[in-house]
Amino acid sequence: MRRNFSLSILCIFGLALMANLGLGQTTQEILTKMVEAQGGEKVLESIKDMTLSGNLEMPQQGITGALTVLKKEPDKRLVNVEIQGFIVVQAYDGQTAWGTNMETFATEVLSGEDAASIRRDSLPIVSSLNPKKYGISYVYKGQERIDSRDCFIIEVSYADGFKATVYVDPITYLPFKTKTRTTDPLLGDVETEQISSDYKKVNGMTIAHSIITYSNGQEYSKITISKVSLNTGLDDSLFSMK
Image 1: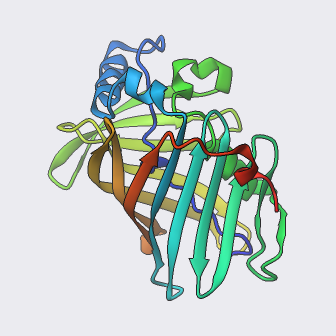
Image 2: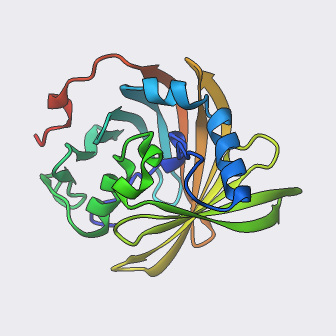
């Protein structure tokens, strides 16, 4: 197991992709419909904080744990997993990425891809309203047939150079699959795919309640969300390094 494992669940929050980005007409149409499918601009803008509760399964490691994710706009995030009596945390308080060392279970400042990953996941839900401000760009890459559906392909590039390829369901206009490629110090190049499903409306916002992650073709983890709470007034102290 990696020294610090990442619990990146980008698709839980969707991408909040906005139209009028100065891109091709096809891209704008797809992004506009994605926003509508996720609840619409007003709903996305109304989200001040979010709490998700559920379970995390990592079959290769034989791990099952209770999962809690806290997200506070514009840039705070905390992922908490209880595994066999131990609490594993990854968080970003708006300035510092921190989390649990998986060898010592001590809390420490994160660095490298672990830190970069949670910083990206901590971006505002509506960051794409002003993509240049956050160094985000989108490129439409055509279509690919997956499970009898011709998915639209959107490549998302971030300020730190990271890229994600999002496959959009042509019927629902919701993210179906997200593909990324990273380099692990032990495993080398790793291709990760996240399959999002079981979308449900919560106070007008559409959120995936099931996310299965594959690493180099093998199932790595499964997240099942059982409860979502919005705008409960999360305190900033919840995201501070303990």
